Image (cartoon, rainbow, N blue to C red; front, side):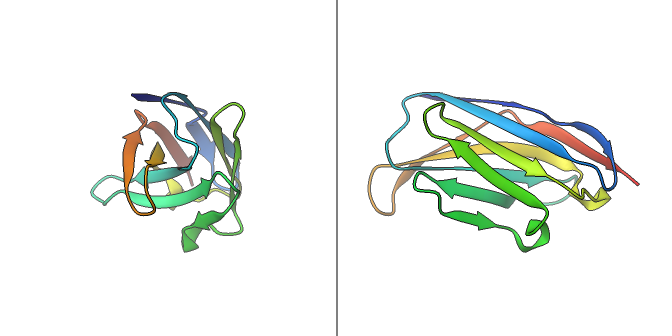
Amino acid sequence: QVQLVESGGGLVQAGGSLRLSCAASGSIFSVNVMGWYRQAPGKQRELVASMDTVGSTNYAESVKDRFTISRDNAKNTVYLQMNSLKPEDTAVYYCNLRNYYSVSSYLNYWGQGTQVTVSS
């Protein structure tokens, strides 16, 4: 089993910054992808950014050049630095871990979510 504990959400004014952290514990496979998704009210959950164990990243177009994902593999922790925040970034942000046991098969885990609110 895997546990994901998020921290760092909150209320910030437009143009401000926040840093989210997510610490993973439990059975973490050597090949995994950690990332952040978000879900705004009335909308589907969407990928924000992800990073695999060798540092390859994937970003949503809407956050490129504003958000940066990073990870500390020794601590099994992933971070999301969010700069130049906009009101449309307001959402619940969820940490995600995919434990890969084959090329295309994985076990999927979610954190409890942390609220990010950007005021205009």
